[in-house]
Structures are given as C-alpha cells and as structure tokens.
Image (cartoon, rainbow, N blue to C red):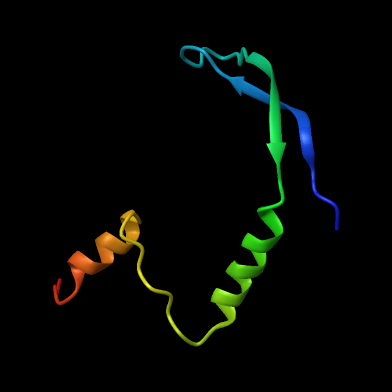
Length: 76
C-alpha cells in the first residue's frame, strides 16, 4: 500500500458570529505538507489493542486515564 507523501490541501470552514437564520461560511484553502506513513501502523496497533484480552498500560499524558485513576475506590 503506497502512502501519501508530499503536498495536499486542507479546507477549513467556519461560521463567524451568531446564527441569524442564515449560515454564512468563511472558507479557507490551506496548503499542507504531509506524510501518512504512520496511519496504517496506528490502525493495526489499535486493532491489536482492541482484540487483546489484556488492558493497555495507562498513559501519563492521557486525561481519561488520570480521571479513571483518581476515581478508583470512590463510590457514588
């Protein structure tokens, strides 16, 4: 499977201000240099993790892992 390496484009759309019965979009087309070689290995690693019977190790930078760690032993 060949990956994308090189330039591409990203389209950003935003709605300025409040909704007044009409949607007006600000559209920006931005050049992007990219490399998607990391995508397929990340998907395969995620699948392996989901198919495993073992839980993954918590990540110190993960907000949800910290939430779960702090909630251990707390009853509601």
